[in-house]
Image: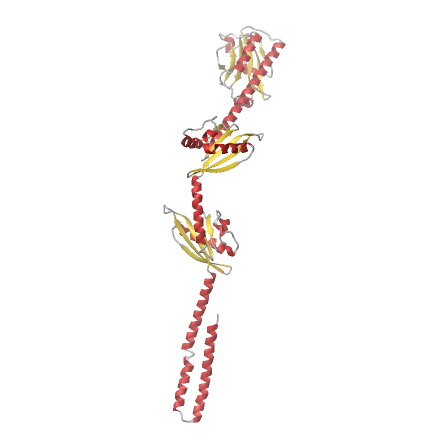
Length: 480
């Protein structure tokens, strides 16, 4: 009974071999020619049974490439485990109506051995055909089996070669993708300093510098400036010994970084060198500018003896921070370079910063105070516009104003004391003074001695009262 599942598996294996519709191959043709000679038959075929056709990989004695799939010959032989023979096709019910039997060709004899791979999949047959009936001897059957073994070996060789080519093509495609995805020059150089592979960036650079593009097989040193060639020969010898080398070179205002690495095969043997070249002129210029900017910021940071000044970008990454305030806590501000602002600021300060950020991106300057562990910090955030008037960074200045706030509190308390003294002067002092003045006037007009003594006792009482008030004012004034 025909098993569709098994047949589909067989077809899948057949397609895996990628042999259908391939050009003529002398290795297969020699086998069919040998079969014709050994068996003295007019026709020998190496056939592969496809879904709806029988395709001939090699055929000797006929000039056709394929025939429709019909029961009785190859399409039946593939279901045989070993030798398959039809001694007289015109008398065999299974082949009586076959087109090759009833037609002009007049086939009578057919013998085949299935081409079995992977232990169970018959992909086709090697067969011999004759127009007269015949019977093969045991020895002849063994010979045909041996020819089938040769065909199977060739099929396996073809598959291995095809897969190797695919792997090579895949590797080359991956190499191309890897090399071309880079924005700097990459080359793969053989141990003999011949170029094996290079990317378009390399070609463009060499076209500008040397007036020509490097090709596979070219000598690498032809694309190295003469002044550097001897030095690079030494580098390559070191890399072939397993060393990785990075070196920067400059010519005029242009800077280049060379990175040379050994390339290993699966056996960890060095088979070549990866040569990477990058134009780092822009990087060098930016680095120089960054150093100058950092120097200027360091000078500016010295003006923050009680705090810090920081430059932060839109992603809240700290581009710079410094100031004398870090020394109080024995912290190196450079440890925060490139980190998120949340790693640099106290939680209270960072929360307030998050609240202020929307205003910053609108171009507003924001100031606020934060209390932390009996310390008071004044924070001022100022947005910075680029040449396109876009805000991409802001300056965060944090100053410890604890002493200033304490002074303000002392001044406030002193003002309150002065107000109290003024009140005492205008109220408490005026009353006893007025009484004393009144008693003195009475004493001037009084002639009675007893009354004068009485006024004197009153006067003494008021003077004592005035003295107490004065002592109180002095005490309040001396309070801190």
